Image (cartoon, rainbow, N blue to C red):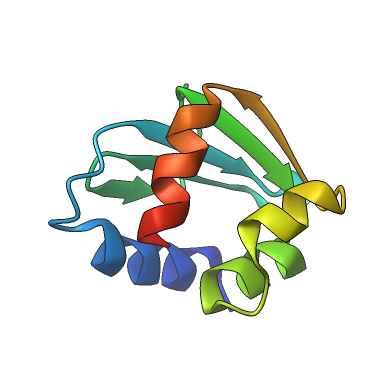
Length: 93
C-alpha cells in the first residue's frame, strides 16, 4: 500500500475525532506520515511526537493487526517527544 493511500485512510479516521496534537511516523526509507490535528500529509514536518517504525509494522498498526502498546513493548516502535500525543492518537487509530 502506498504512503498516500495510508495517509488518506488515516485522514478519514482523524477527521472530526478532535485530535489536536501532531505526530510524525518516521518509516525510514519508505518516508514519513505527519498527522497534525485533522490534517495528514506525507511531507516531512516537525511534530510534538515522532514514532519510528518499519512500514510493514505501520501498515499492521493502521489495519488493526498490531496493537500499539504491544508494538512499543516489543521494540517495534520507538517514541520520541510527547508520549501523550502518541497515546491520544492510539485512541483514534
